[in-house]
Length: 619
Ligand code: GDP
Image 1 (cartoon, rainbow, N blue to C red):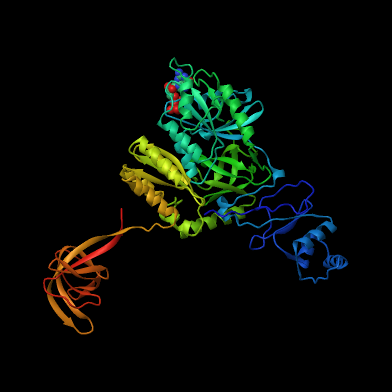
Image 2: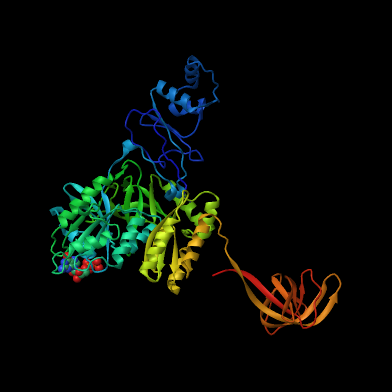
């Protein structure tokens, strides 16, 4: 579970605008606490004594004590002052004041930075282009890339940066180059959400296709608004109305049909309609009121990274909040480094990059992964400390990956009263069944838990399903379908649970039970093997030892067993020790002789069969 921390408490008495420094930007005293004057504002993180405050604001302690005395409270030099007293003292001696929480930045991915609304400024919209294969995503990316070129950009956009900005009517839009929902959701699976808006490309002559639907699901699961680009309008078979109707069936409803999805009719090939599309993006971006605080140290996401032979590790970073400067130190994963050179998509060297700006950066000590989050720090020491700490932690706990939800987790969370939403992906043998399951699963929603079916289609469980499940903490239900070995392995690696069923009501019952916190994993017995008793010995302090021959499978010491005489189970208990020759052994296989005991049971006879079994989770 992600911990949420408020980084900045509301200004207690600030009247002047100030540079809101980042939490990395303060002297520390061991635990990350701070107390210092910054541009006329006294910023502190915890209650202070009179002596500490005196030192921090450079006012003699007796003066503070006298002031408080005149205010009617009598304090000593080592007495802790509360926030109100600190505020009053600051104002008396000419400082604004602000209390902020000290935050440990080691796990910066988990910190939710809450900027003061007055520090927020509009930022460009970040757009990803998705759609079915061959519907024209790449052509559209290229068309946008080569539109609105100004003279200074004549060299064209470098292909290697993986993202670029376009300025249209003085407003910027950031485009992520990698089209498709797989890349988009792979990022999300790593916890990164970089896209504000999805442009869904649908070829007017081909209509809605499977990957169009996948893209819709992935965008919806990410809570990303969609603009539709109906492409290939120059083709003779172009039928935009049909596309709109098909999309409507999947809840993507055009404005002209009463919905809120803007749709542009374009030809990526001829360039027709591209300007309309760009205008729509700007309009939607305005409606989304995208904002960031350019005054803090940068944080964002790695879009791509590689090792350059000459320059070393090279990464495209998307600054999402704050401003990255070319003297900053960046931590990403367990790597850190100074921003040695920062360039934009035209290979122009930048001194700084604000929110929604993609930049190519060299100076990192290693190659980070796409989707990794980064954070900038003002000093090498801080960056290094944090990177080292992260590396250590990683070593200590080889991370279990971003475990998606399992039904058992759900069960536990329900019992702990902690779950509110449950995401589900349905794959069934027919579309009809998929729809029926979707409707029935959603109906299971109750006051405590809401079931969201992210996608429900016919067909085999695919990579894309696993990825979506991983990114959205979802469970996959398969009905009369099975994942192939490769997909199964992917799911295991990603800790995505796949539940397979053949009977609808069983699937629904299982889900209902989990939602009530009542699921119990059903166990079934699995016989490990049998042995026949061929000799009997009585040994003091041990009891009856049976010299036996393992006729099938194996027996394991201290596991469950039953004693069978003439085909009837006469005792159910546990194996004691196993002896092979003079040695105690843990396990004995078919074809070997052993001496065995049954714990607490001595009535063994020649010819009896000892059957070992285990309880295993039902498939
Ligand atoms: P992607 O797989 O979605 O990236 O599709 P591409 O951009 O590679 O386009 C697939 C094919 O459709 C290519 O042959 C393009 O030239 C063609 N194409 C793309 N957009 C248009 C268009 O607007 N009109 C026509 N006639 N062809 C297009």
